[in-house]
Amino acid sequence: MAKKMMKIPQDPERTSLYRIVVAGELHESWSDWLGKVDLERKEMGVDSCHTILLSEVPDQAALRGLLNRIWDLNLKLISLNKYKQDK
Image (tube, rainbow, N blue to C red; front, top):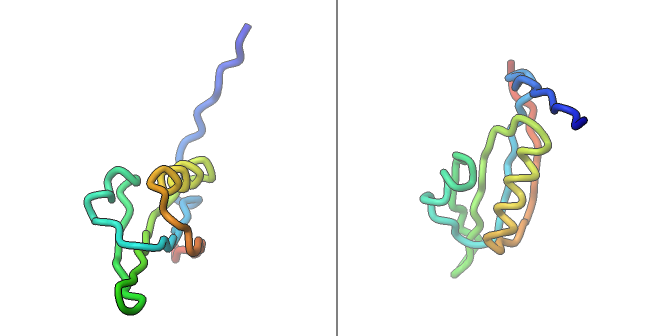
């Protein structure tokens, strides 16, 4: 007999804010596909830029999914930082 997986309710207290920086320009139209992240373009000099993604992530599985999407787009990951949110 197969075990049933118990659904764990999302706890807003456990949601984390992540700031992810990737090389190159990512158009804002990708925001929904990436999971409704906020995108910001940052100039890095002549003909160079980075895209900053800000996303609230409920758990490690969701973070892994977001990183997989970045991988699927063949984007170079520059940094990944987790921020504590004020309650």
